[in-house]
Image (cartoon, rainbow, N blue to C red):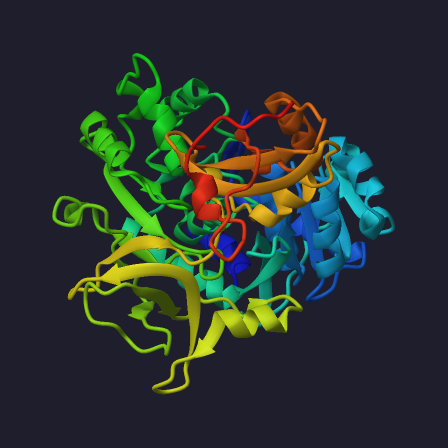
Length: 505
């Protein structure tokens, strides 16, 4: 099924039911469908046709939700990009996806104009132009196949170059139905999304809510946790998706009162491993809430979940394959390894992506045939063990990607910026454990001869050229970079504390 049909079906079932709550705006299913259909007409009037890419640079809000569903109604593909994305990365994404239209926050119009690849593209910005787009006649709709692409979600691989994950409507449909089944979502749920909807995990909250006829409570961010907790109380939220960094912030809050969370039915955690200590504290603090530890990748949305009743028996596990998917831990030849043996996790199922947009090399590396029967499987690049019952335990990543707050950071992308900074001779970037972020970006820097640098100066330079989550939280000065016996810079050694204090003067 196509995802926009979720909205139509839920509206038919109960059009008066609340669909979207965002700030002071409340949209019933009838109104949300009407606004989305009107915006779809506007998109078509701007030349959008089936298969075109619409680049969305919007904050979490009702306008973003309307734009997403309008794009699907118009037969186009969403390319939702975090509004905090810097110009250089935005240019890379624009070059790759070739958007036919840009929908952006009004404050970002200058940013869009500064990107050559977007400067000439038609655009629609929040404010008068966006509001006018909602005055069009509702789009009548047309029958389109669910094999059409629904989304290009950009993620960085080990090279640091953004790759567009191609998800068809049928891929997103399979994932949403599977997730809703084990979370037991219904129209009675009120799901909070503070995660960016440009992030697969955040976008899926919108999709799942519309599938089940639930209410989606949209917040821009988790920057002010106490305000979010009050929102949970006031809106009687039943579902709270979070990432481990948010769990850490919750548990570190002083005098945290469980009363605002009385309506919660479940919490989900994904995007990065949830430390057992955080999980234990959450369970003790909110004993009435069902916590779901989950594991997934943008390339297939969700892979595994740990049923709450299995937490005590299998501490540290990310659970079993989601309904409809099949997982195996395999060796280098692609064959299953015995229970308890470390190998690469592979996934098969209707939720798996089509591939990477215009990147055949990366697609062939990620989607490989099962040597036994030739069916394609997604190779996750992550090392796992599985027990005899199929419960999976994460071991480590096979690459060097750093994941602060669940975001992906390629070390090379940060190193490229560091190497452009005057006064830096060498730099190496690694991920190190962090109580709040899960992982923090650490830069090991060797200053050029005669140069004087401070940690603050390095961080400030990076902040001018990188997205916030990519800026190093730790800058360590050394006389030389740690090397392996073969002379290569060693990320493993760089992640360890420096044996002696390096000089930067």
